[in-house]
Length: 134
Image 1 (cartoon, rainbow, N blue to C red):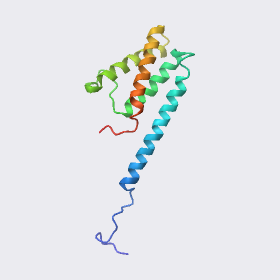
Image 2 (image 1 turned 180 degrees about the vertical axis):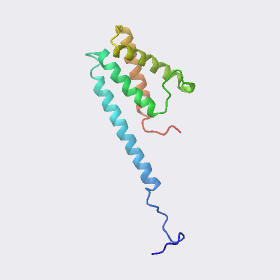
Image 3 (image 1 turned 90 degrees about the vertical axis):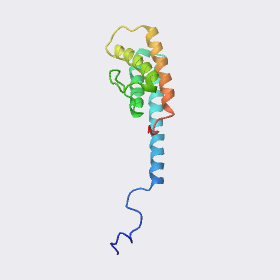
Image 4 (image 1 turned 180 degrees about the horizontal axis):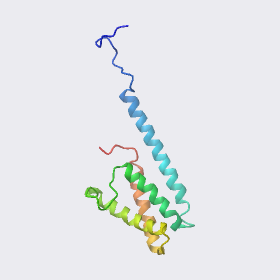
């Protein structure tokens, strides 16, 4: 067996680029299915108890936003740019969800608006789960 670097094959034991790309697509598909299944499962509770469902829906969307690289803290200077509209909507949802978590008396209209907003954010994000943000 030759140990001369000129004589070795190009393979270094790492997956080739095609396998890596296929693996990333599979992972993206699994993540998308996971998020979709989780969100839709929680969504089933919206009709019966929207206040109970809202914090869980917000949690799913928060994780999706984090995966996409969004900066979720309003005080962070990086939170802005082109995504500021999505973030402003998310922050409003998070505020209502936090109030529900804390047991505050939250109005039905506020919960309904937060539910509509979280669904809108989810729909905008689900098609991009697993895509590179570069």
